[in-house]
Length: 93
Image (cartoon, rainbow, N blue to C red; front, side):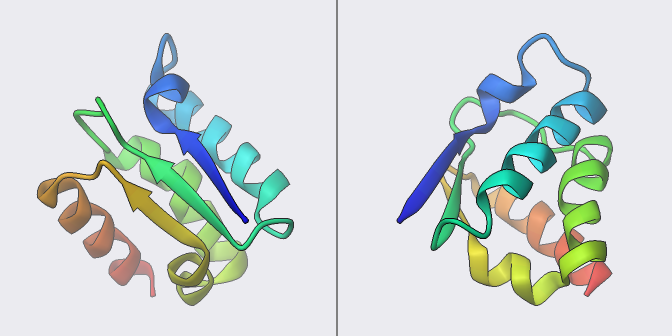
């Protein structure tokens, strides 16, 4: 079973760190109960470090980069976003 998170909705009316913390909390609640978590990036223009540090960075520190690679998928992601996230995860791997 896949669980989809609409990242754009999380970013509305929140700072990047607050949105990242919200993403981390949702992922933490669902990650062990589903096969994969799909992050839908439709309408998301930026994925800044302030967002990634408190979401992906925290997950990588706690569970490792390989765990992230196995459990997280993306939809509606641009080539630039994919490159940015890949570089971020590799930096911490």
